[in-house]
Amino acid sequence: MTIKINMTKYKNYGRCVELSNGKIKALITVDIGPRIIFYGTADGRNVMLEDIEREVSSGGAYFDKNFTAGERWYIYGGHRMWKAPEDDASYVPDNYPVKYILGDNFSEFFPPVQTNTRFCFKIRVSMSENGALTVVHTMENLGSVTANVAVWALTVLRPGGAEIIPLNTTDTGFLPNNYFSYWPYNDINDKRLTGIDGYLLLKQDKDIKRAFKLGTLNKKGFAAYGVDGLLFIKKFPYINGAVYPDNNCNFETYTNNLFLEMETLSPLCAVEPGGSISHTEEFMLFEQILDTKTLLLDKFFTDKTKEQI
Image 1: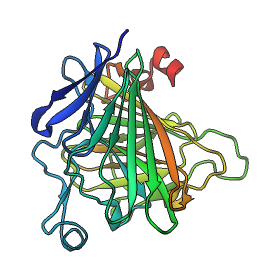
Image 2 (image 1 turned 30 degrees about the vertical axis):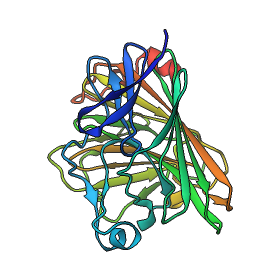
Image 3 (image 1 turned 90 degrees about the vertical axis):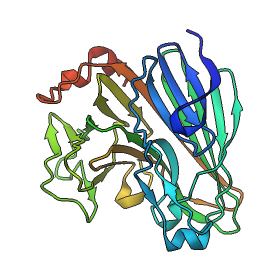
Image 4 (image 1 turned 90 degrees about the horizontal axis):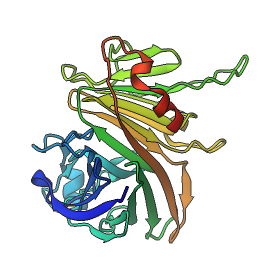
């Protein structure tokens, strides 16, 4: 199955690079971002959030001081790249055109160098014949000081779905085999989070505005989100012995009433001037009948999807 790549316009996001195998397509913005703003089916079903109304944004004194007065950062939706650990400098307005290169089955995206961090980001997106995406995120330090950072890859997904996060199942005897990072705004009794058969289940609920965030060391290297008859699977590396941000988390998830985020992180690394670090993810998409009432695992993972995980 041949991969086609071309330029198109999409809603109020402007120009986008489109990669498609005829059944599954991805759209990556180049007038802003970049964002993988669409990953879904040729009939228009998109697992990504599209913040058409620009509801989610940040601004204020930090932005006025470090960027242009009145500048705002917008979530836009879709998949983006940040630096971790999170602080004010993670929020860099990306409202400007992005340089890009088109290949046979891939494209590379080069947003402007960040004026506050002096990091240069690069994202390479390629599509295989089955519609899977390989997304390589690279951070290069163009500043004059060493920075202790990690690559942070955040996928913002549309509301109304349910996420499955595998628990670690290694028998560690007297020692724990799972641990979690909680954020101060969480409700420990949040009804959106439950456990079932070796997995955590987090439901996105449009009626619950309060934010919830959870981090963990995901040794299985995948998580999944089912929505609108589609199953989105995100795969990522676990490196044994590495030190990750946020109390050693390589996977984090966040939800509120508008969306659910699946976030992965590279190990923390001291990046010297002129040095760089990279982090690779794989996206997969399957047609799936998802029963969010019974939440049976066989509704998430058929034999076919299990083989590819």
